[in-house]
Length: 307
Ligand code: BDR
Ligand code: CA
Image (cartoon, rainbow, N blue to C red; front, top):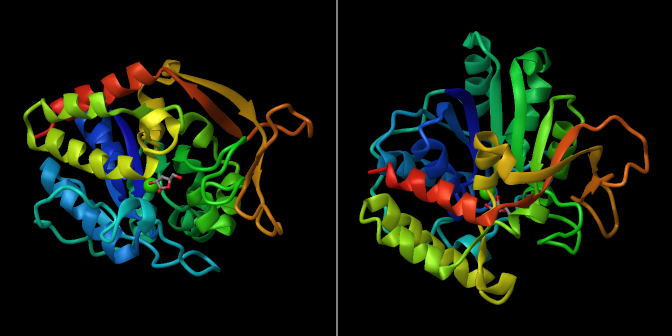
């Protein structure tokens, strides 16, 4: 099993990402840490605890930073609702967050692990950046960072910036300049990773609680996307896990990527040198296309394995 550490801000698509990671049975999930993003830290933390309870797994959950490194927090309640994961009725959490902070937990897990660990961030990169700055010597224990964020040719919170990067651009800059190998699933691929109403009904018909939660989550999440993307909803975050499971499902290109932190129009934009204009050594495996049918099937198979 591939050892991973997940940092997320659930979040509807973060929830599905967790379902894929757990249900696939392919990962040794060392911990889940939570970022402030889709909603406040308090709410994303509580949502993560609820999901662990729903899936009935023994994965420790640790609380991350309350706000971005230098900026005020911006939330996406216009997508994810008042609680950050509106739609389904979920069980109240049966467990409490772990006694360490997210950063301390990351440090302990990486220090104790004999093997390298892959980090999977699917929210703003505040916790990951703080960790990299506080424990630079532990970089060598990170196998790779497979993240959802950014985009080369589109934005969703500004014309060029994607939400996770825009919320904490300075943190993203630290991560992209860290020297750790990065896989970036940005909007270029995630806006092709669509889930349609007919897919949602298939999940509902599985008959287990997780299938029902998936369907209720996607019903709510789809409202925001219904106007665009041919009626499908962009299932962003599970791409970061799916790439680790089956990279052949995706089309990628090695590129040099940096983050705009002080633009007048483009703050929070990932500047992807897709055509290698700068002749820099690539630091990112840039993911830009997907076999959508295989992706939905992979998630379906995982959700079937859950309670
Ligand atoms: C990203 O922002 C959040 O709303 C989603 O969970 C995803 O991680 C998409 O821009
Ligand atoms: Ca997210």
